[in-house]
Image (tube, rainbow, N blue to C red; front, top):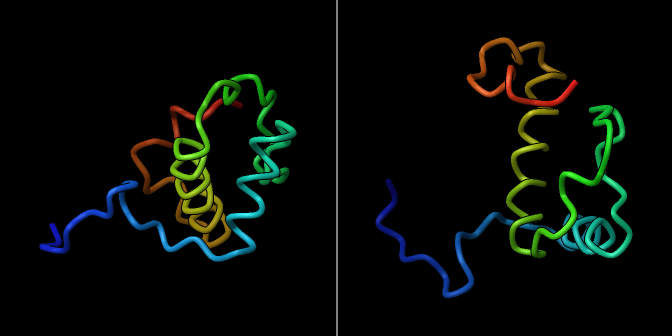
Length: 83
């Protein structure tokens, strides 16, 4: 674990302006920014704060990258994602 202190708002997920915009759009509209993951419903994310959505975005982005690299079966959470 890093010795870097956490920012007052939480961990630094290195969000670029385009990612921040996608998270804000997701929060406003409920439209999931990862259509290729084919999640059935955005209802599971309703009620999450923008901070929580940032974390979910980060995890979904990692999932998408691992899927693209054909490494998805190496993850422990693959069985937990809705199909």
